[in-house]
Length: 210
Image (cartoon, rainbow, N blue to C red; front, side, top):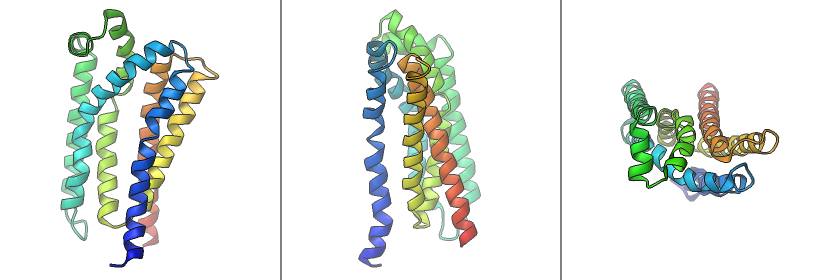
């Protein structure tokens, strides 16, 4: 192990964390210029917090993959099944919450929104229903790449994710004039799809080159 190797391994991961923090201020920038900006800025932290609760399993799964993947990927199939199970169960849990009367219990009683604001937050929350599954898949892919000491694709995927979020926010808010919270829900899902697709593509290219 040399300083150069440590740098090549660590810098993309540090860049990933740095870039990830840019998503929220960029989203707030566009929400402030959208239709119903005050309402959108008010509900999005609650909506994203709800999605985060169901994303935690996928986030934690990345560490499990790093620890148990194996030097030759011998536990790959088992970890894929675990990832699929975590993602689908988490997504199902969010679906049950957001597409049932429990949604209003969460948004009004627990989160403290008024009935009008709770109804306003419902569609953006439902638009994030894929995030728990996409987070689990993303965590698996990141974990496998980190275990292989191949971290450049991780940073590239974050760049793709942020780029897609910004592109969708601009498209839905500026030309299309959509409500900000709805646009943000679409943008977050599109960003996760872009990040996952980028990781899968770059990982496949890396395997072909090896």
